[in-house]
Length: 143
Picture 1: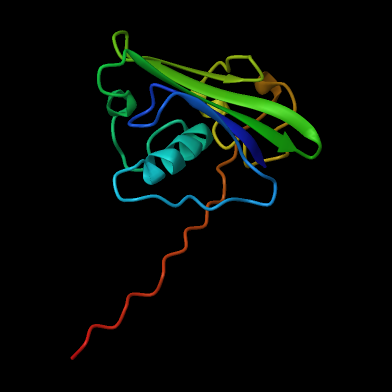
Picture 2: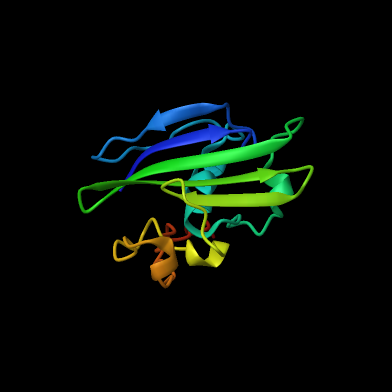
């Protein structure tokens, strides 16, 4: 479970740390206020790329040089930290799990959703997360 999310330089979101309640939360705001960007930051910690297919450079807030997202996860009673950052100038992406950088970013993909990935990064094989998307049924148009 994602317990907290720290953001810096990510899209239009203010630099902040958000503690997420165990019971869940609803994100409600007017259009253009960052609801999708907030979800994108969470998703980024799962696959280390935008779910919209945007290049990483486009995730850096306008006028900023980098972005960084960090999530604290509680998995089977153990706290883990997953972080990802991109420096726009060098185009270098860095991913860490509990402060340790994997040999390949692919080794960390799915880490936050897969509780079996709790050994050393070098000893794990990654497995893709299962993500379920729910969409409301389209409203019937009047005749």
